[in-house]
Amino acid sequence: MLEFIQLLKQRYQAVLAQQVNGVSNVQYQQRIDQLILSEAFVRKGQTLALSGKPLLQIAVVGPTQAGKSSLVNVLLNTDVAGVSPLAGYTVHPQGFCHRVSLADCSGLQRYFGRFQCIPSSQLIAGRYDCYALTGVDVVSPYLPPCVLWDTPDFDSIGSATYREGVIRAVALADIIVLVVSKEKYADQTVWDMMALLADLHQPTIICLNKLSQGSAAVLTQSLKEKWQQARADVFPEVVPLYYQKPTGLPSWPSAQQGLLADMQKQASRRQHARFEQALLQKYWHNWLEPVLEEHQAVADWEALVHQMIAQALDSYRRDYLDHPHHYETFQQAMAELLTLLEIPGLAGVLTGARKALTWPVRQLMKLGRKQLHIADSSHEIVLLNQIAEHTLIQMVDRLLDRAEQGKQTLWWKDFSSLLRARRQEILQDFAVAAKNYHITFQQDVEKTAHHLYDKLQEQPLVLNSLRATRMTADAAVIALTLQTGGIGVHDLVIAPAMLAVTSYLAESAIGGYMHKVEAQLKQQQLAEVKKVLFMDSMAKKLLGLPGHMPSMTHFNISPEQLRTIEQQEKRHGLRLL
Ligand SMILES: Nc1nc2c(ncn2[C@@H]2O[C@H](COP(=O)(O)OP(=O)(O)OP(=O)(O)O)[C@@H](O)[C@H]2O)c(=O)[nH]1
Ligand SMILES: [Mg+2]
View 1: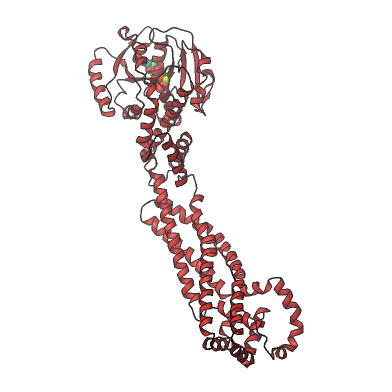
View 2: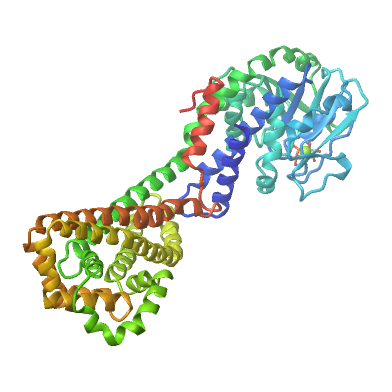
């Protein structure tokens, strides 16, 4: 699950960074926050499971200049945290170990993952994937043994660059100390953050900083209203902090000295797994919305591919198989048949040519040149290539139509560019496959010729009269000329002698049989063209295209990936969808 959340987060970030039109920036930013938070919370669960006695983690959070770092110093009674009047001063999560040894914190590195732990003196602005842990040699009356985290703000202009660090530190916390000043407490960013954290069920206190005497009650009431708008849980305890002139620091009221130690008991670690599941379940559907929209687009694309291929096959049937002037394959079988018949007198016709032909004919056949020549001159191949080209042109048009329909516009636009870029390659592969199909299919043509020949032998009357006619001798010469490369396949279809032989046989005693084998040949041919050319070559490439969409602008998470993760979670008892 962790890897999947990371993947989803990266894709959201990439898509958002491309400033893709039509994408709701605010919504995507919110989802990125939810993903960062959930990733961190899952990591926390793993950390808790691995450590026997987990350390208490307290995070001080709030908007910039609220006095977070100052409060950390107050709670620790030192000046370890950097304080400055410059907004966005703290930019890295910094943990201070109070009555906890640094060695006990070693498990935290696993939690922080790609974030590197470096000494606080070496933290530099500009590199945000790091955090610091510092041992503090004091015993604070306000704190139980814990790691106290000073966190960066989440509202300054620059905070987007270090936001992940804030959320990491905040999600780790068992207790949240929200620091707001009277200037900042009403900011929407504060309450968005509090709303986001609600599902983590962390016990929280609110420190109202930079107070002037007498203003606490009014502000607390207003705070309560804000809290209730953002969260469903009980309004937390408020700690009013007043400025201490001599130290320049706010002071923690003595009446609430033991507050943080008491809150420890409320930390609900045992329920972590339940909260984690609820968190994922809450967001899962929303997170996947653009992923599922892409799946829908891919499904629409697949339907389009099948529809267009069905149309292509219809054209093939209409313009080739069922076209009286174009269908040449059966005529090739007839030509083969003629070479099987030993036609008297043919030798005479060919005497001159025969000597010259015999050797090269055999050689050519051995090399498969006969098939090549037939394939090169075939009208069928020309037509198939035309159909393929026409199909792809139509597909691009259809994709642009989809883009204009307004749903998933960018996906369809990018996809049509992808198809245009790949079109030539697909057509070239198709042309190669078409030629190979044609050559291989000659075996079926020859088989058909042999069936006819066998049938003729059962009808000696037909066979003999066929052998004896002049038209047969003429047709046989044409057949031989085709096979030696003298004419193209299409010439065969229009040669009168060939037509005469075909109609003679059609009207003879084997006419019915001839029609049957012709129909069979066509059927085999259609099945072969469909499988080898349109399914295995064209459809396969077209259906694989969505996988080549750029990951910078699209989620590209396959239904299989999604199914795998959902099943994996189901085994852990989590029903995501
Ligand atoms: N007047 C007054 N100033 C305060 C108080 N607490 C902090 N400050 C000042 O407010 C400024 C910001 O304090 P920080 O503690 O650095 O605030 P922060 O929330 O850590 O700010 P970032 O790190 O920028 O997010 C500093 O100049 C502090 O001296 C207070 O209680 N009263
Ligand atoms: Mg600070």
